[in-house]
Image (tube, rainbow, N blue to C red; front, side, top):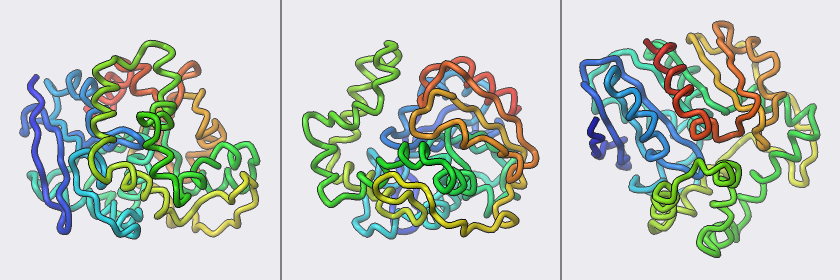
Length: 292
């Protein structure tokens, strides 16, 4: 199936996107995370575009999408509205939202605000906001595992992450590189996306714009400030989770049905944060079965 490319306006910015499949088919919208871009979904789209109309934007600041300077533009509230505005370029109908990592954070927020627009929600290793706050409050191991979020907000983080041919960004993929699951041409595509002017800074601005974050030093003890009732997801949801994720520990999915009553949870004991790369066929099958 041919993957097409285009740009869509979200008001003050333009987002580049990939699309494939017949627009008359049920729609899947894919949101990537850090440090990836829309290209992470190419294999998944290839497996699904015979049955679905697939859309995958480069989120704000990534790859070919615009890169505003204002850090506040990267707050979750604005990024959720980017998703809503992006969809204006396509025929309005209910769709299945599929998301990983930071894309998942935006997907959780989108589902909370616009549940009536969704057919299904599929989350891949992306923690629900209430579960994340609970874990960094009660679990020192999760607080330590989340310390990198604080480090990425440092004034010199842009240069540090761009240094040595993006060594720190490439280090993110060490698990799948060691398994031989990241092809040379895929890694070259990531390098090209990271090398675009302003891309590293824009990608890190997602972390700088966070309102909820662990304390510096990896301490637990953040106060409970969320309202459980306001964070209940009223959409049929599938969560796929690699249990060897070393950034989001298994505690992040404990008791998840407290906030996601209509939940299907499937875990992968040998997979890491990069489940989409490690279990390509199985992930595509799970999405198709659930969205179909």
